[in-house]
Image (tube, rainbow, N blue to C red; front, side):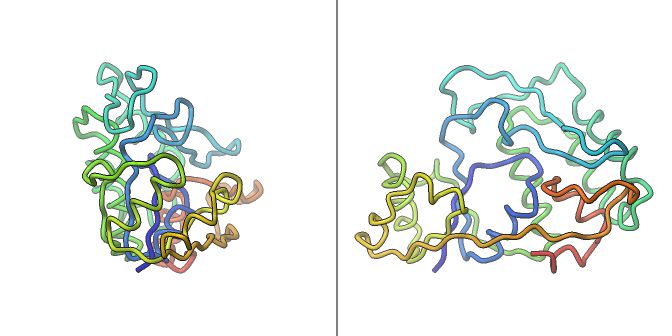
Length: 224
């Protein structure tokens, strides 16, 4: 059983879902430290000038876990994000089929970041026909640091193979996996191209998954 582990992100990009597609279990690593100015509370969409950030405002303190981070409800970020999506994608071929659900998710009252991220991720799973078993690391009684934690998480859910992103080559102790009876694999992902909005500009990779869904509709699953 192949397992992948990743921090919950805000409207992740295609590569996130490419990795999940190849796994049986997705462990949401929700009890590790929140990364300020990372992708846990923001992501990119395409616009007429190239791209822009959509950022969820958060109330954050040092060494706070992702699942502890609160959203700054004083800012009407959800409506702002939805307005940005309408401005840049309302003329996309497949905007309408996704609009109602996505608007409802973005403009709902969210108090914490992690439930928002996971609700949006599961929304994307549905439309990409992905059906992994979802487990939260905070629900598993697993210790260890760095590589040892990943090994222990895999074993806790009965996995026999860990699929890492390519960045894992820089920091994983690879020998720890076979020593624990696990196979270690690395994701092989080359970003595909597809028809985007604002075609007079060059293709812009690494956009939020909404870019592919609005532009490609059900065919977006084949980009994975």
